[in-house]
Amino acid sequence: MARSRFRFTGWVAGAGGLVVAVALAASGVVAKAAETGPQPQAVRVHLAYGCRFPSGQWPVRVTVAATFPADVSTGKPIQPTGLRTTVTLPHAALADPTNGSATRVTGSDVLGITVGSGASASTTERWPGQMTKPVPVPATGLLPLPIPGQAPPVIASTPGPVTFTAGGLRLSLVLNKADGATASPAILQVTCTLNPGQSAILGTVPLVSPVSSPPASPSPSQTGAARTPKGLGVRGRAAGRVPPAVSSG
Image (cartoon, rainbow, N blue to C red; front, side):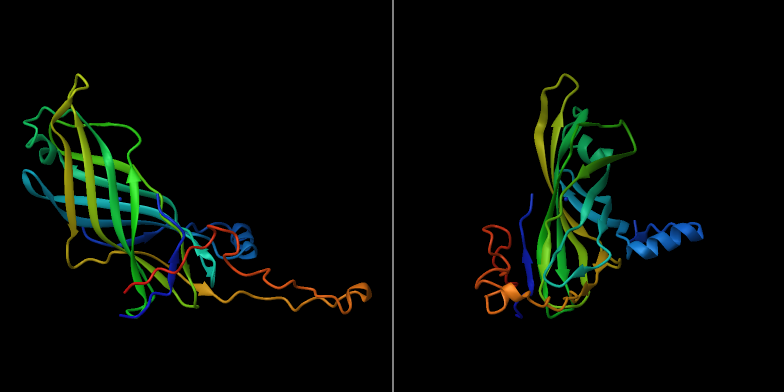
C-alpha cells in the first residue's frame, strides 16, 4: 500500500448529493469578492444509511453540513469548520427497545471520513460530534438529532485536489424517561452503513504551491552576516505544532 501523504494535527459523527450554497449578488459585491480571492465552500450533503438498532435494521437519513476552504497552500493545514451532522431516526427505532418509556434522547456520533487525492494517496479520519441538549422523542414520525462536531485539520505535502468523502457512522444514544431516570436500556450503540449507489463526497479542496518572494537585498551593515540562522524556519520546530506523518499502510 502506498504511503499516505497526509498528516493530521489532532481530533476532538435519501439519496446522495452535494449542494453548495452560492449567492449571486450585485456587480459591486461580486467585484469585492473577486478582490478578496476565492470564498470558502459551504456544503450540505444528504446521505442515506442503514442502521442496526437492538430492534433491528432501520433506515436513517443524515445531513452533513460543513465549510471547506476555497484552496490551501501546500504544507498548510486544511481545516473544515462549522461541522454539523443531523441524524434523522424513525421514532420507533428508540421506542421499540425501551417499550416506549424513553421520552428524551441525547448522545454523540463519529463519522468516518476518507481523505484522499486519488487511489494512490488516501487515509481514514474520524469526525466526532456531541449533542448539546436532549431532544424530545415524538410519539410518531421522525426524530431529527442535531449533532455539532469538530473536524481535525489535515496537511497534504504535494499540490493537487484533496477530497473528503463520508463513510460509516456510529451513534451512542443516551435515553431518559419523563421523570429524568434512565430508560432501559439506557444507552444504545448503533452502527450505520452508507447505502450503496450514492455520492458521499463532502468537498474537494485544491492545493496550490505557495508563492515565495525573492529575498531582500542585505543592507551594508548586514553584508557578510548570516541572514538565516541555521535551524530556523523548519516546519514543526515548535513542539506539538505539526505531528509525525500518518501512514495509510
